[in-house]
Length: 107
View 1 (cartoon, rainbow, N blue to C red):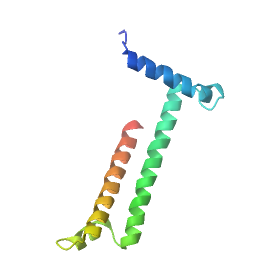
View 2: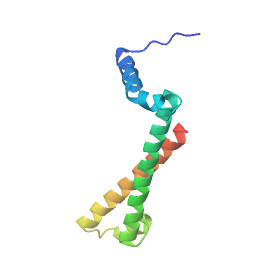
View 3: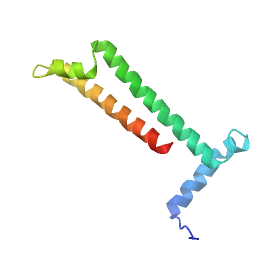
């Protein structure tokens, strides 16, 4: 059996987490600190996924085409506004994939 050693920062972080999450446990919303962390983290991740899915859907509706079709239509003739839209759309797709990968790793 090994003894874990925590840094002073880790100890402060755990004390702070126990303090701010204590009402959730005390009121019976969650059984323990681990369930609080898990539920809140998954909720945040799911909201980020929804945000970027919505952004992607909005851009598809605005441009009336998929990202790949939009990309192909810009080849060698994009205006600065179209380039900016492409960058925004690519960022939304990238963050969506990242949050989806994170979700897979934490469940």
